Length: 137
Image (tube, rainbow, N blue to C red; front, side, top):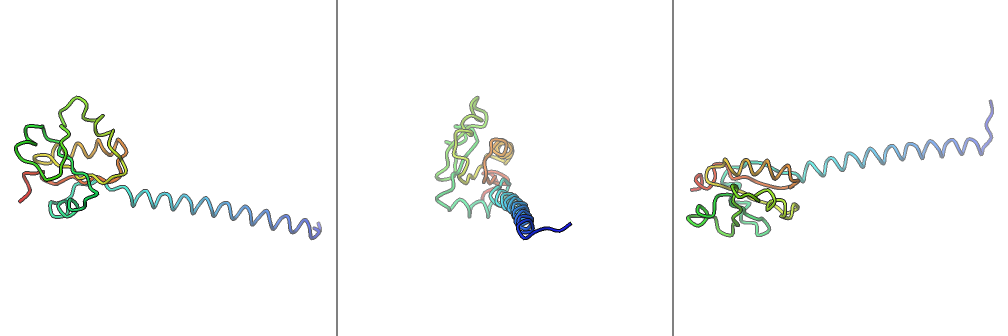
């Protein structure tokens, strides 16, 4: 079977188009997966790293203890969202999920649970203070 120049050109263009599309979708998927892995940071970290991150004025510090505990002792510039309040999850969900959050409680128990909740709610960058405020020097 013989092909003329027009048919050969059509076959070549079709193959180039097909390869380009496969390559485009492969690169797009790889890049999307890579970006999302780099941007998602939900973890419990030690006090030195947590305190270093807290110096960033862009970070939002959240104390998840009760308001009474918060009044007794808190970390500067932190906001209080009581873990035991009926609308705790709703308050978290109303926050800007693209910001960096630093969370803490008394010993790390409530903030550890909060970290899991924030992950479920779609937050991208949250750091939990290991050992809570009691672990700070």
